[in-house]
Image (cartoon, rainbow, N blue to C red; front, side, top):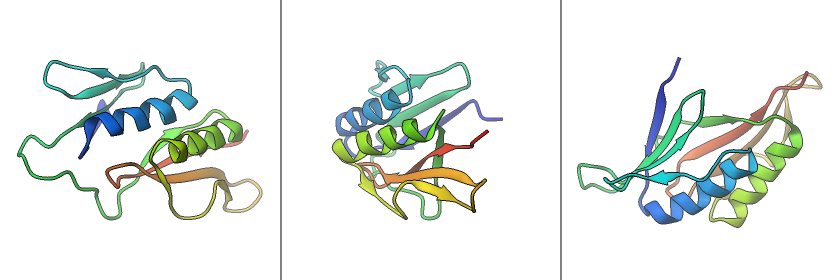
Length: 125
């Protein structure tokens, strides 16, 4: 359904370090900075991008917004979470774990260096 998602970053370099770590934990390559100073993470399924706002105003997170990344396993979600905390992210909501009973989803939530809420999600079996 989506071709790309772009979010604002207050400090693009700090955000790149953070996303290189968390997306690297999920098996993705480091982001590439283009000639306009935007950072792109390319996959066969779509593109995730970071940019300082073009209107010159500060970046802000969406209240009630969450961007979810697929995790192939609970271990990958845990590695994603640990990489995020080690690179400027902050745990939000509960610690990584299953939600919705024994057949539920495994979720790990963070806020990135600009305050955006992100999640790694693993759907078992």
